[in-house]
Image (cartoon, rainbow, N blue to C red; front, side, top):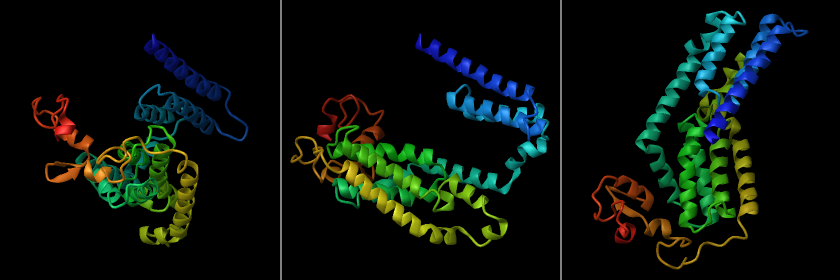
Length: 302
């Protein structure tokens, strides 16, 4: 029943978006706009409605919008799809391809773990660790969603190891620090997000020529330092008080112990990783093997 209701809602949203576009085009021209401009506006509104409600996959909606620009609004094929032949498009495609490779290989996760383990296992220091991790890894992948998907589980795992209640104040603080880290660096380093390229594109051509990636970062560095500092104090003020670590914090490796991330790490292959990651890497071992899935004593025996 729920799936049927969702399907009907999506169909209703699809029809509503198309109806708005049709009404705009039928009542053309809007004062001050040509037929072509009004048609583009109507098609864009329809696409936005479809994107928000998830009527179709995002890329399918984008293709439908581009085709309607050509068929309904009368824009030439060359003008509609010219961006896909530009140097910016190929630069972004290469950057996203590199990001997918880093995610698939686990390189970004290993870098993040290496940074986090350099900080003491206290809330204050782990907030700083999350801010530093997001800032350092920001330039490597130009997608905030990809970086968030990779670093959010790490932030939650750290909260679990320190004994913080899921969705509690301190666990939320660690998540906020992770999010601030990856988002704040976005306009500071051009390659950290599409935002950087968009900001540079808004500048006049003669101003753009004055900047490269290094000079852009130097110019934005004071802003980055101030915003990171303000966010740190805000997170500490909002989430750094009023919640204690979980019980049993005196036990080695127990949640709440400041040495838990170090002492509960397992030897897995040729490097030290957390218990959850090590368990994932042992998928496929026969039950009964030390640390294998299905063994009730696997973590204790490991």
